Length: 227
Image (cartoon, rainbow, N blue to C red; front, side, top):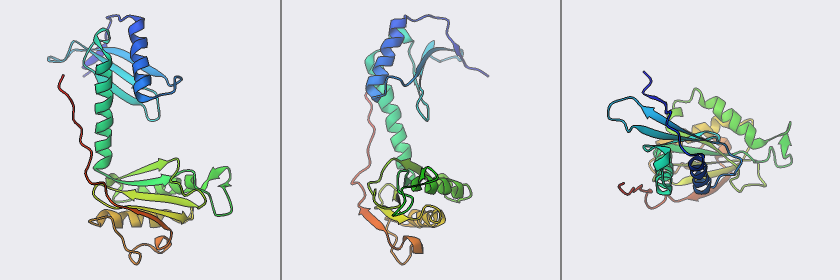
């Protein structure tokens, strides 16, 4: 059952442009990032007569909904909606464990790339493949990042979770490390404080630890003003 349909009510083109400008400003987007804005009419009892849906065509696409017609949307409506969605996303990640994988790391100490790709790309590819059958797949976010500042080393990864020490490792061979990294991630998940001793870690990860960062004192809280 389709509870929403495009509204025939017209909004001034200037309003569309103004909303786009606000979104570009608040999200700090490049001006060539496409933004789609449509007005929806809800046919379900109790719905606002008109909603406005905003889609920002990044990867992945970000979508937002404001329970007002386009003509009534103010800057504060956009700011509040973007802030709430951002905070909800942060809370989602903070309830999970995270495995950060540097995409830009060297292939080896003496080789920057192999067949046109960095070592970090190969490690990430193998981690994603191995994680398909990993029992903790739903409990972890495997998050690629541009840099972990271990630039003169082969692959680097970091493990983080709420109320746990963050661990960062480097010098990982990109083609042989994925299984060991997921094994360490499982040990990290089962630990109470994020500490996995050297003797407990897989052999390939018994060396190469780059950092142990204490947990943040308290988790971020989202507070919204009432409309």
